[in-house]
Image (cartoon, rainbow, N blue to C red; front, side, top):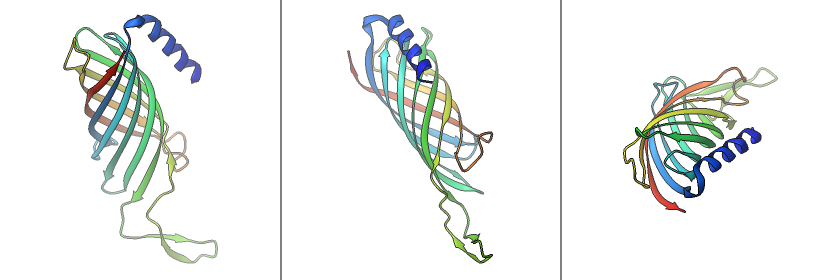
Length: 186
């Protein structure tokens, strides 16, 4: 993984030349757990080596969702990726991340059985889980030709909850949102 990230960084920095900038972006949007269970996501992003052609975004996101028949979820996620801009304003991106997710079961009461067979009320809070993820993105730059970007995007996301769920069980999410550049540095 480190090797792939280094290769991507070398390719981007050599391809973009000395005109590259670092951009600080903020964004927000809809986070649909298993596509249809509503939630929100807020993110901060540093775009390294940003040019008109490409960048390496380092993103930190915090979000939540409500699965009416199952759980409430709160997560913190950090990832790094690659974003390719096209002259038409369209961009493609990928992001590999890792985070933490906390779930609260949606029920009136949770019961547990101890080793002696005694039944007692348990906690609705699930243990904190590790959240590795893979995100792909398709978007459009509303402010082409400007260093201060306004981006709209759609990002399908696959993530795991480890150790709560086994490694072959993953969750899908759909993210729809907006990102705005708040500052840049040469």
